[in-house]
Image (cartoon, rainbow, N blue to C red):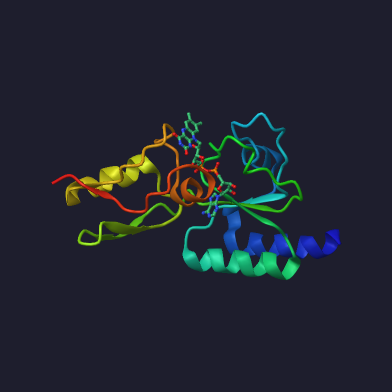
Length: 160
Ligand SMILES: Cc1cc2nc3c(=O)[nH]c(=O)nc-3n(C[C@H](O)[C@H](O)[C@H](O)COP(=O)(O)OP(=O)(O)OC[C@H]3O[C@@H](n4cnc5c(N)ncnc54)[C@H](O)[C@@H]3O)c2cc1C
């Protein structure tokens, strides 16, 4: 079994180079949320930089039956980034672009690693802001914010 999974790690190593790691420090960092729940480390960490890389990562993990744990900033409070069955932590910090702004519809398209504070700085020139404001605004990223916690209002506000 380990030899099979090793095949997945070498594929990801080949795909991502230095943006793939099995180092214990990286694995520990990606299991360390602010929760009281003890950390459960992933087996490896990946930092994709594009949608295509995410597709390849998901494809490889699917073929080798490896769990995937998305990672925003690790600020969730319930041990949500723990990896109880091991697997691959996918850290989205390199995918942090605001892709489209639709002022008429009061919505926008973002990559998963954009943080609340950056989003509002980039929306400001459009006269828009995202009103839901978790106290962790310097770090919180959007997919986890919607899947993990309270904010559930999907539109952005208009300041002018
Ligand atoms: C000081 C402080 C104040 C806070 N205040 C609030 C508050 O006011 N309101 C509130 O709701 N929460 C609050 N929180 C909790 C926390 O900040 C939120 O839950 C936040 O949304 C988590 O974002 P994150 O990027 O750190 O996610 P992470 O902790 O990295 O991940 C959270 C979950 O989302 C999953 N995930 C990560 N990325 C993706 C992805 N791209 N796709 C799918 N799933 C993904 C992870 O696997 C994990 O299960 C606070 C936390 C702190 C430390």
